[in-house]
Image 1 (cartoon, rainbow, N blue to C red):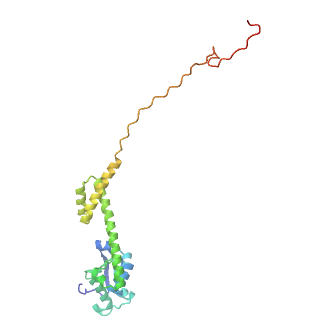
Image 2: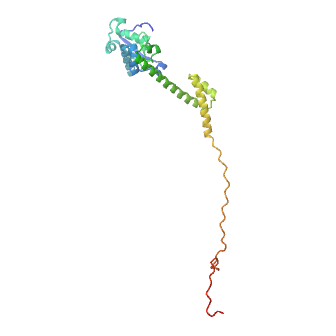
Image 3: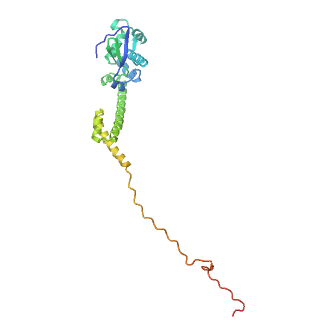
Length: 246
């Protein structure tokens, strides 16, 4: 930890401490995580001060001037006593834990998100909180790995669809700082997915059509009746003999 810095006693300029990694992985000072796990390490005064500073940066993201006396009174601390005043010690404490830093003699840069506890810090927690923190950290890591894998697959599939071969896809993923093992697995997955997609788009050859069967000939009747022979085709009938026939 760094030594106690020297602060002005009337006003202090508050600005954002930009840290891409902690900003992405960290926790808002007003979050349940900070209240549950950081409280016993930073102390209540430091946690309350970080909450006040976060509120101020929400209202004025570009920075603002902090009234030292009013802020000290708002969290129940005294400012009198010079650098050893309770409020000054609290300011020094958040700097020692690298939650804030002096950019110059009158400007304090403050983190918008607090980092997760280190393993050493987590070991200082009571047993129940330590176990809860370990479980939460394991869950967070698993979620992070799953998210990284989803992002890597999406990027790898985009690369192969743009025409990159498998080796070029893996190299590009490594340049984007994905895990080496993940790069290898995802490059294989994307290349195989591309081959499957290409096969699915290739139309299958249609089976040869069977030759059409000739139409069946209509049956021809043995005799067809005509107007001149209406009795043709009818069964013969015997006629009665005429009277007086020889």
